[in-house]
Image 1: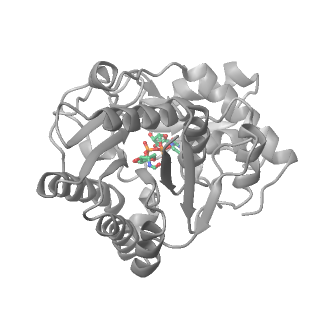
Image 2: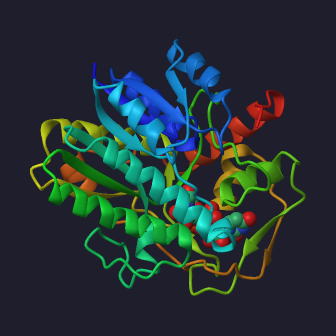
Length: 343
Ligand code: WQD
């Protein structure tokens, strides 16, 4: 079955997508520079799918290496491009790292495929919407000025992809705008592996519950929301991985709506931080030590997705709810407590 290049395939969403691609009959080929993931993720993937995925270690910012890889793999028919720097806070402190890494890798990849028919799926983010004026937010909502260099790289990447798809005849492209990816594979063999102090909510919750962190601080309790804490559309990483398989299938059939398209990948449900904490406590049976503290700069107050286009056109709908997201995240945290992976 078709070979699919998965850049960033040893990362959180990439590894789950490699599993779902394989189980859908594809042959995933991983390229990763291991700058923000562990090579042992290959062993973990192998435990799930029964074979070791093909893996090439190099940096997509290296134009020659990228060109050489593409030229020597002519039978790759599709690309899912995850490889990028993705920490919102770090991007504010190190914008040049984000612009260099996220744009050079993307442009080198697109250039390497010039003239070659390619189906290309891009990892984008609901962060491009900023604070939407209307909720749930649909794909037709205006893209707002990004709150961070990370968000800006996603917005500009989408423009690069749209213009590339429409200027050249060999690219068919879809951008998937993720809401908040959380949880882990049901096997608890792969999951989110934050290096250092977790920036995102759910790994901080599970590390607090297991005793690696003393307590969780809820960033803000005085917002105009159900309980004063921010609202997000959390999406199970396995559902998210399946959305990438659906996008590849749509591109293989040919997207009747055009050579470039975008889809919201969320559940359509919003949960506040405190509701997410309660869901974790219910799903895990663990009481969480948390307190409400000051707001975090740059946070938007509330966002959840209108996912009707993904259901209608991508043939994809999230199947897993907040309980499964939290239960699977907790199982994964306990697994890596017993079986630490080399960072
Ligand atoms: C969620 C909510 C925090 C930690 C960003 C990017 C998005 C994607 C995911 C890359 C917020 C609150 C968090 C904590 C808290 N990027 N929180 N205490 O900021 O919605 O999305 O990360 O994968 O593109 O924009 O995710 O998990 O950081 O925060 O109260 O210790 O949890 O304030 O309301 P975010 P997050």
